[in-house]
Length: 316
Image (cartoon, rainbow, N blue to C red; front, top):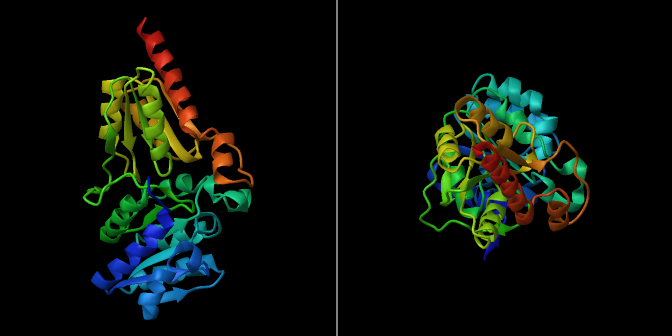
């Protein structure tokens, strides 16, 4: 299966959209080769601004450009965008509801050897808590290109989470992206895995492993963390009776928390959150870190078996 990093797809999407939307401008914090905004820079040098290693200032510049009628896409690593520049995002972008798109790459533990200081595991929690902020986490290159276009069409702030490592291409060219609507990639009646980002491909592998054992597991690609597709979550709970969430993020404040909140209010069922368990990451190869922190198809399959056991116990 072909693998492409979502950051690569982001760079290509920006360059394509630049031809359609003259108000689109791109800002970067001296990481354009890594975030792939260099693709846009080569094509539209007059609409690209390297703000240097000054992420807080970059957010302020983006706010000013948005207030002047431009549509800025700000890019840097997720740990810098949401950590170092959180105050500027909150006060200068989210509070006045300015039309700024924050595209943060190198999120999660698959940043790999760069280690804990560069592995953003709390960025979704921070961005999701900001009023009016749309939060997107595409699963593959195709979904990323569609998500960038969707972000452009949103009138307000958007956080777009991207990754460093190549991931399998799951969607075909005719895939339709609808903001706020989960995508059912596999039907099932026994349990549901709701996954986001790189964990969607892991969820599909887990579902196939379980199918070989006679279990029928649904897989939802939850590319929009906010606004969450509550209807799809509740429908999965009603129809399958057991939920597992999967994310390359802390289990606190991200997809797992969002789904738990929805189920708690609408349709409580046995549930388990698979993600980083309230710890920092460490340096290592991406595949080693996914194994150590329990983010492999095997771990997801075990989580599904756990919620199924709880579901069956509740029925006795």
